[in-house]
Image (cartoon, rainbow, N blue to C red; front, side, top):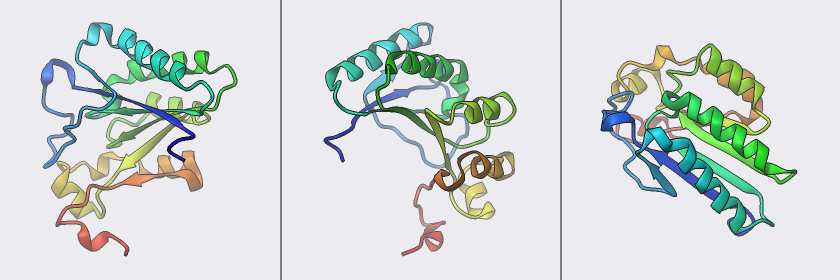
Length: 173
C-alpha cells in the first residue's frame, strides 16, 4: 500500500507561535512534509507543496494529511487547500484528511465537511471517556458534537486517541 499511494503532509504552527488551541497535557511536536509559519503566504506554500507532491508520482493516488495544532483554527486555509486540490485532481484519485479535536466543528464547518465528504475527511481525536478526555484536554468533551462525525461519515467515522496512563484501560486488546 505504501508504494501505491503518494502522501504529503502539511503541518503548521499556530499564529504567532501561540499555545495550541487547547492547552493539552501533550502535543504533537513533529516536522512533517511542510511546516507553515508564514501565515500571510500559507496558501502559496500549500499550493507549492501540493504541486510538488502531485507531480512526483503522477501514476499514484494522492493523499494529503493536514496536521496542526487544531486545523480548523485555519478553516479558510483548509477551504483554499481543498479547492486547489479539487481543481488539480483532473480525475486522479485524491483525498485530503485532517485530525481535529472537534471543538471548532460546528455550524459552517459542519456544513462544509458534510458538503465535501467526497474528498475531505475529518477524524476526531478523542481520548476515551468524558472523564479521561476532560482530564487530558481541558474539559472539552462537551464541546464536541460526536454525533455529527457519526452522521456525516457513518461506518467511515474515525477516532484517534493519544494513549496515556489515564486511558489505557479504554484500549481493546
